[in-house]
Length: 363
Image 1 (cartoon, rainbow, N blue to C red):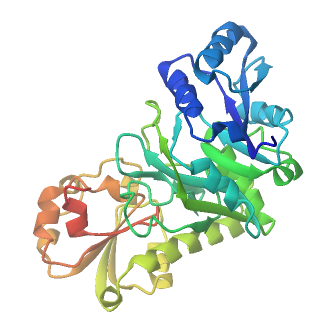
Image 2: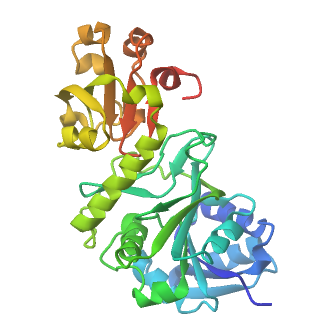
């Protein structure tokens, strides 16, 4: 029976997470419809071959033994030569698939000009989004709708994206080979973003399919929400402009009719310097702007340490513009004072929130 796609994975960690990943992959309902290509080090052959046998049982696996997994782009590129299908699915070992995830991704690749697709990635043990694709801004890439509730209406719509993550990425084989695969100069964190940016440059589409869902287990050594892409050689001005337009489009979809008519004081905590231009392009009426962009890299911004607290009692509407809204959510005293006002929280992940949403138990 011809397989639908080839799942390509690098096994480079002997921890329980890898074992559980393989166990749950074997439990995936339609796993027999997919070819499995597992790459691992010669030095760890005994361990991983045994682990694969233990977890995958009778599932046929193509074993690709490598010298080193230090350059994952090179390993993925070489492992793809061993696959026999027209679709590659690159998958990290910190991913747990939900029902019909793979089928939804594969089906998307047969629509129009779509050459790459990723699912809704949900932070494990939460109901919050990890990634729905990348949004580009000033040499940085932000996961779209990161930290938003999975049930939010705006999240449950599929979109074309400038770039996608490689944590779980399905890509057309011919496109992958024409692009010469992943760029070996790019680290694992950004290789998916780089190759899908090249797809966008060629006039084809990357797609976020909200019906495809998987859990993402956060690595303990990755605490920062700030996601730089300055090393991505393909990040050109046209991509930045396209990325900004994506952010603006998503924000505009979420602002309500009455909110367009208000005038706002902008408090900018993001790394974006030209915030006035952003507000103008969004058709938001800004009467004043206060820049605190030096705090943009902070994961937890405490307003009492930065902003004069008498501003919390001002009779005006504020827009708090951040890299991600989670940076300012832990400010209960400030936001309790602002409940009677129609403040908005906007961020570079494309999120738009109101104060009651910010301080609700759900957030």
